[in-house]
Image (tube, rainbow, N blue to C red; front, side, top):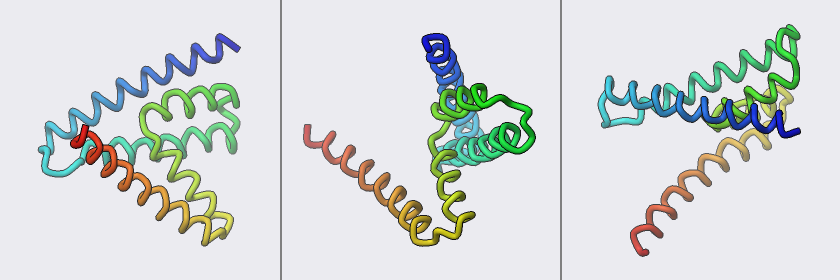
Length: 125
């Protein structure tokens, strides 16, 4: 159990550092007027999540344990957007239109509200 937690933590550290480096590089190249770094990280994260999932589930090239460590540790730290998009894609794949809409609209709305609240509260304190 401790060994698995150590691998998840190590993968998480790698994901965090990768996100920081890639996002910063893209922002420096594109300018700060729009969050292109976040877009690139989230898009790449979704792409990698899909690839890793397929390699583990459909091609059996990655064990379930390695998939768990990479998706939970690295991808969890690299971007949570990949998990969000995957969950939405599963609802859409299963023709769960209402759940997909609630998930997509709700998560985005909640995120915006929380950012606004955090910003507002930090201004008051």
